[in-house]
Amino acid sequence: MTPFRAYLAVVLACLAGYTIVVGLEHGWNLLPVFFSNIAEMNWSGQFNLDFMTFLGLSASGWRGGIASPRVASASASSHSSAA
Image (cartoon, rainbow, N blue to C red):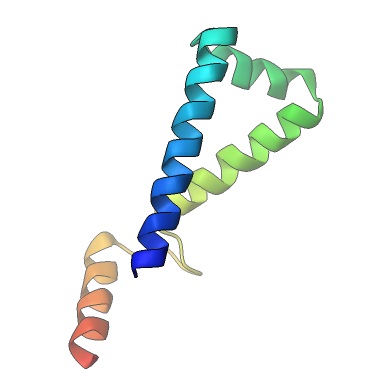
């Protein structure tokens, strides 16, 4: 588990540094740029649309069927008690 935590720390540091550099150079107006790329129908917009779609899918908790959070937590607790 320690190598994974080290990896996460490195990734977080890289993303934070990258975000700061981009924000200082281009400004902090992410949403207008994000959605204007989608409206322009270019490769950046295609990536942004894919990213937004998969992020929304991930946030919804969809796992091959629509499950309520209560069902998901009951499933998780049954798996943890089996271990």
